[in-house]
Image (cartoon, rainbow, N blue to C red; front, side, top):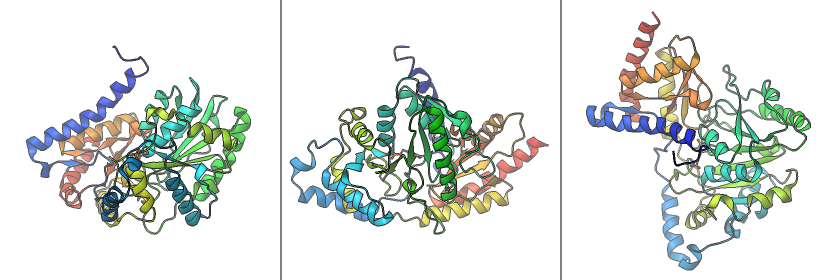
Length: 404
Ligand SMILES: Cc1ncc(COP(=O)(O)O)c(C=O)c1O
């Protein structure tokens, strides 16, 4: 291999997702797109709100092109950072200043900035299963290792009881994602307070502060009037990572921000690090989109389609005997594999395989650190969900037959 040894496993790992995608495309050609039920990707199915597109047009028309298209401070336009800080202060009673806000290339950009700034070679980041699969790759690329606290399979809340076992002097960061991809669970204020207490003990053991990346691209995608706790109210060393990929359906535009809690230990050093000019080679977040989201901070996503899909899938799948929690946020359903097998990983792998036979594309929970479950992304056309129920029914029958 000509690529680095560090990248080798990442390249091999990514081909599994590519294969699923390619398989879906092949199936669509063979059986017709209306007979394939692709639940694999978290790509929003709801179009970006009209105001976002109008604002892009207006920004281009009204600003001087040199200003819109030019380099700027690495942390982003001052006026945009100021607007984000003001918005968060109004919404949550927080006390951010512009200095605490760094405009990023989506949530992925924000997370990678932090990992690269904090990690020395072989340092550790702790994630709680189930977690967004890419964390493993991001941490590896930053030279660190991901330690995974096993899932609490009853609730899919943070498994704080087992967290202390994963803490060592190498622990630099913890990463949590609320609401959660893939479980759809929302971490309660009580869970977050328990995490803070556990972190204080962990810091004593590690001998240094531990910072928490609060990855929140789904913060505004919650149902039934649920409220996402404001993380810095619960977590002291809180580095909040937000993205407009899901809330404004802009994943290809790559825009988000990191908000550094003013209560963080060594705040000046942390801020200087995260704003430093070498931020993973991308210099700054896209300028046109920064100026656009500044005008759209109060815009809320239309959740009606996701909510309809969520209830439709949950009601129908549970009626077929599948077990899952009703998601409180994001747009994923995490379903327990009914296949009896010696190991949880075999059970979910088998369900994925049987699903493909019914043209259902489901993602194995093993990659999310929760073997025995599969993820269904319901950010899809409602009509496709309705068409898929006969396939799910055949899948349930096949599982029952296999279990004997
Ligand atoms: C939990 C989580 N974090 C981060 C990301 C990356 O988001 P972005 O497109 O903003 O980089 C995703 C995307 O699916 C995600 O689900």
